[in-house]
Image (cartoon, rainbow, N blue to C red; front, side, top):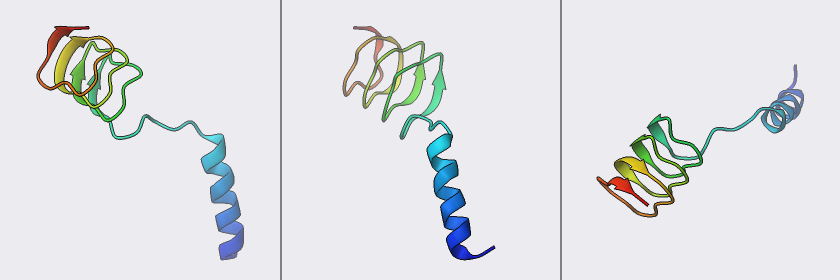
Length: 67
């Protein structure tokens, strides 16, 4: 296998496989979040940290029951 073959196969694999959300870790029951860390029961949040039960939040930290 040449480097060109490997590169071609790797590109094909990257295009076919689903990608996980970017820069989000330690999520529990939290969908459609990006750049968020340690969330629980949250939905559609961006740049949120250490929060729970939040909806449509932007740039929140240590929030609970927020919309």
